[in-house]
Length: 365
Image (cartoon, rainbow, N blue to C red; front, top):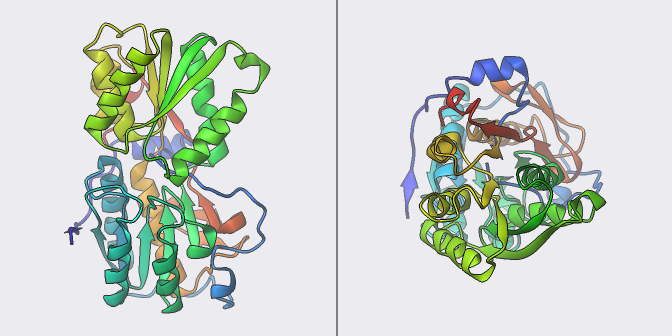
């Protein structure tokens, strides 16, 4: 089993300024979304728990948490998990990261089973597939283990709460709006996604397609949704294939940090630089060189440090009984302040933020 634990990570040097200005509300969270937007009055816990929350209960000490990302070598999720591990130190908890090296649908199952055997107090998961992990997660919950999904949701009945980096609809629609701005509202474009079953990616793409139905996008055409499986080389090759298959392609949206970097790297060294727009979701450090060399004009994200921090505090609050995942409950999240649990047990970090040449050097993550 691959396992990583760490201490505190250095926060972005501009965090305080950004937080004070309120530019990013909860700032940049990177690759996640929710599958459900239904008005479910209860949280994800559903019938699994009928206990009432005690918002004044203190956070328990010695809580054992485990972060289970889609894949352990994903740079974005590494940032998220390290921040969550560091946050656990604030409430005297113990946290670690474990996970597979591939992002296949079933790759996380054995890790969940092991964490149950280890008697973790909470499992925090970015799901490769919303349903493939449900069986073992439900077994974990039956044993009293709290389950928090983050970045990419499970089916709601398989977890207690979902920490969403930004509202899924807002992410999907904002990606199309940004691309339309960069493409002057016309031309063919493609989406370079992660895996075909990724909950967040598919939800964002659904809202992209809905946004495209508006009359202002009548001259824009989505010609292909390609999948790079959150693998750098495959995403690079998919970008090459898209440009060969669609000679009139004018833009690529890659709503995944691995995909946008791979697409930008290919475009930057090709004849398409300056002709094909690349945008999507990426981290500033990852995308800085491509912004500086003119390959990418604008892209979006949120703060992965804040996403991991919020998820960590949500897990601690669940274990301590401060919240149960019911709609309307208030989560006290350390330096991030309070967040209200929404429908289906969803807790939203904040809106996406747009990075460009004028502001990218203000961030370091």
